[in-house]
Length: 173
Image (cartoon, rainbow, N blue to C red):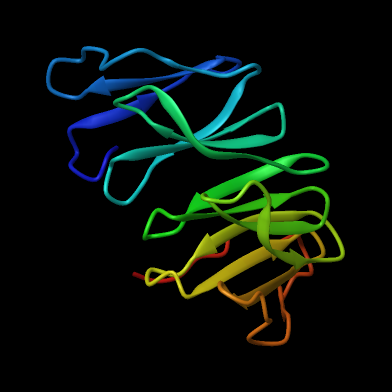
């Protein structure tokens, strides 16, 4: 759902487009946002102005969904793109990849602004509600807290009690 609750994002398994649908009348809003391969995730920005999508081509994209145009760089990993999240201010994105990196992208630049390195695949990454920190979860069973501006680790690695991969790590609101 969009932050207003008026729109919802729809794409089917294997679909190469994201559709924005009006909740009240179930009608499509604008044209679909087309991708070269299957869409793997889609989410609204916190203000509902933009969409963040990930695709099987290992790239994340930010869209102005009303104007049907891409904003900022194509955000790519060398390997599987596991997830991507927009910062609360909408100006930065964190992507998590199978290449052992979480990349922080400034949407005004064509390359990552900060690289957060793990030893194995980074499965999840989230911004804190104020955008100052990022938490990442890794296939090696650790979670790490990072300064979102500098990329400096804020704590030693937090190890999962079971030793299993950390697939979800998040902040409380």
